[in-house]
View 1 (spheres, rainbow, N blue to C red):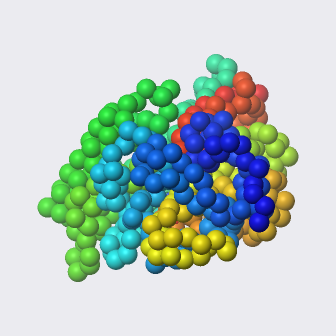
View 2 (cartoon, protein in one colour; view 1 turned 60 degrees about the vertical axis):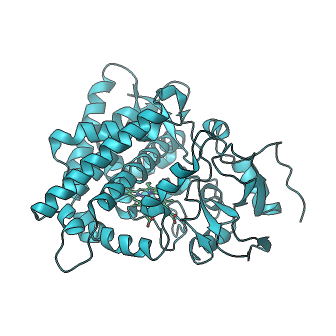
View 3 (cartoon, rainbow, N blue to C red; view 1 turned 90 degrees about the horizontal axis):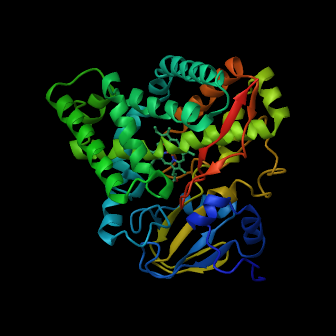
Length: 414
Ligand code: HEM
C-alpha cells in the first residue's frame, strides 16, 4: 500500500489543527492509501505513555471497532484520544467513572438503568416544553437582531441543549443558571480564549457532581414520580448509587451539551452557505434534515478504543494494548457509503452516518433527543428568522482535540 503524503507531524487530534479546520483532504488520502494508519504522537504530550495510535478512517472499519467491544475496550484508556501534557494518569483513570469509558459488565448494568430516561415515551414527553423553549430562544434572537448582527452560538445554539438536559432530569428552574454555568466551564478549558483554567473546569465538575448527588440522595429519601427517582430509587429494579447518578449527570453535561450546540451552529452555517437548502427546508421541513446536519457537522470528530488482544483491522495487524482512534468525521465522508459526500443534502435518505457512534454498546443514548432538539430549533428559526444572513468573517472555531466546534457565528436578519 502506498504511503500517504501527509504533512509532517500530521495528527487529526491536534487542537491547533482542529481550531483551523477538519482535515477532510487528509482523511480522503488516508481512506485511499492507509485506512488504518499509525499516527505517531510524542510520548507524554497527549496524556498517554505511548508513542501513538492507529487512525481508522473508513466507515466500515469504524463500525467494526464500535461493534466489537470484546476486541476494543472503552475502559483501558478511555474514549478521548488526546488530553494534554498536564493531565496525570490517575485523572485519566478517574474518567472511567462515566459510562462512556466503561466496559461490560459495569457498562451494561449502568446503561440498562439510565436508558429508562431515554425511552421514546420519555423523550416525547419533553417535546412540548422544548418546543416552547425553542420558540422563546428564537424570539429572543429576533429581538436582538433589531440592534444589528448577533452571535448565533450564544444567542441560539447554546441554550436548548442545556434546557433539554435540565428538563430530562427535572432540574428546577431556579437552579438552571448554576447548572448551565458549571456545564459551560467544564467544557471550555481546552480553549485558552475562555480563560477557564483546568482547575476551574475541575471545580465546576465537582460542584455539578455535588449538586446531582444531593438530588439523588433527596429522591432516595423521598421518592417522587420523576426520572431521578426511576434511576436511583425504583423499587424491584437495579438502581444507580448517588455517585453513579452524579457521574451520569456529569456525562450528560458534556455528551449532550456541546455536541448538540455544535450540530445546531454548523447546521445554521451550512444552511447560510447553501441557500438553496435553506429555501427547501423552509418550504418542506423534511424529517431527514436533522440527521444530515449531524452527518455534515459530525460534532464528535473522534473517539478511541484500546485493543484487548492481538487482532487485525482493515488488513492491518493491531497489537494488544494499542490505541485505535475512530474518526467519525472521516467515516461520514466515505464515498464507499455516501453518494457525493461533500454535498449538504437535507433530503439524503438513507443516511447511515456515524455521527452518533458506529453502533455497539456505547451508541449515543441521546440520539433521538438530539434529533428532536435540532428539528425544533430549525423549525422555530424557519418560522421566525427566515431571512438570516451571515455577518462577519464566518465561524470562529473552537480549539479542542475531539470536537468540531464553533464558538462564534455572527449573523444578521433582513
Ligand atoms: C448532535 C448531538 C450529539 C452527538 C453528535 C453525539 C455523539 C455521541 C457519540 C459519538 C457517542 C459515543 C458513541 C460510541 O462510543 O460508540 C455518544 C455517546 C453518548 N451520548 Fe451522545 N451525542 C449527541 C447528543 C447527545 C445528547 C443530547 C445526550 C443526552 C442528553 C447524549 C448522551 C450520550 C451518552 C450518555 C453517551 C454515552 C453512551 C454509552 O457510553 O453507553 N448525547 N454520543
